[in-house]
Structure formats: C-alpha cells, structure tokens
Image 1 (cartoon, rainbow, N blue to C red):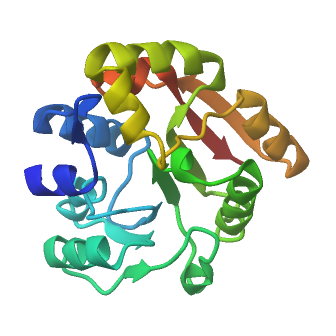
Image 2: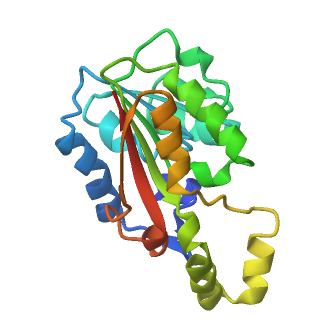
Length: 213
C-alpha cells in the first residue's frame, strides 16, 4: 500500500497519509454504503490502485481508468485483473457494457484543464449509471478557500518552491454551485460535505460530493 500511495502522489509536504488512515478512509464507504462482492465499483483516475485495493481485498468487483499507462501497469500488478484501462476521463465508453453500483473519482477533479472539461467528464460518468448508482467525487478543491490554501502551502514550502511546483501544474478549484447546477439539470440529488474523512494537510480546503437518483 505504501508504494501505491506514493505512486498516486499521496506522499508530499501537503499530503502525507498514513496507511491506517487511508484504510479507514476506504472502509468508511464500504461500511456506510454496504459495498459488497455483488457490486461493481468503478474508479475514474484510479492511478496505481491505492483507493481500490482495500475493496479488491474484500473480493469486490473493481474497475478503473487512468490516463497514465505506467500507473495502470502498477494497478494491474497489485490488483490482478483485466478490468483496468488506459483512458482519458472523457472517454469512458469501454465501461458501458456493465452497470456500476458505485463510481468514485478521488482527488481527481483538480487536474482537469477547464470547467467545461469537468462537465464532459460528468457527462461520461452519468452515461454509466442507472437508478441505483451512487457517484462520489472526493477531495474537490474549494474555490472559496483558494487563498487560504495558497498561503498554507507557501508557509509550508516557501514562495519559490510554490512557484516552481504549481507553474505547470495548476490545481483547479471549484465553486460548489457547479455541481449543484449540474445535478439540477440532470435531475440528480446531491449532497456536499466537508472532506473530514481523511487526515491530510489539504483536507480543510476541500469538499466531497455525492450524487444519486
């Protein structure tokens, strides 16, 4: 698990997650939503499989997509399965042959280039759902907290390193209304909550989204 967390970028000055906290994070969803081996669980942006591994160990049917061929290679190594594909998040048609009880996107939306792109990803996800599917968009950067986040990171790593680190990797922050509006247009219900399910430096600047029929 340590290797998977590192490959997925969860070891850094602003995100240094302990394995026990990570497992507690995933087990929260398993217990609260009674995820079992009858369910198909899909993760968009699965990386090396750190989020899915605890589910896989419980014999839950796991599927995943990531744009990185290298990360998918690691994912298939640790989660021995052919259900993981190198795909961009706006091209998920390979998953249409099944229905999914749960679809997750964990700490992914900040990497999308535009809000329009994020909407296209949501369109793709919604095409994979039925009336029982629950969609979890986790660890979304909160636009209202951008300035506080920036000051916190600069305090941690310094202005120079901040400028270098985020020069070409600009995280996208979202207004919560973006998700409310999308759900209203598509007649989905939505719940937004604080990202207080896992202990890491950035959690206080993020929120979680649950979408369902």
